[in-house]
Length: 199
Image (cartoon, rainbow, N blue to C red; front, side, top):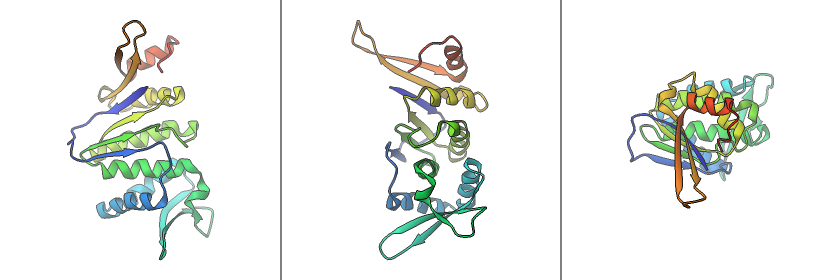
């Protein structure tokens, strides 16, 4: 198992968790409600546009029974359902909203890469690091994806890489004890260049 950390000054009272599954729209609406309360709708739309330049904004359409999320695209007159954009966008929105919900606290993300195409990993880490820094949120993200770890290593070097750590937990075969390895992005990049398995 492997954990990535973005460190910051944080409190332990505000702790949130994201599972590997996509969030249903009810849960997503609770997260988005926090964004509305914080007055960060424009920032979320900007992050979405950075993730996918076709996106203009995220829209909510409440009905008597449920809330529907729609996406306004630049090349379409009528907004499309969020669900039609693929699971990766749902997860990405959930992660960004959860970071703000975890402001001055901690966010734990299991299998962060789930549903997100590998070509978007660099963009995901860039926005995640930037958002975490703005929200003063410490993030613990778990992944077993080599591509996601490589992306983390590349992007972390562009940010405050000394406060971003890679932690590998493995079992020593001889002693049956858990061994913890902690690397910053530079040492992690060295491991990749030497062809070492970091998972």
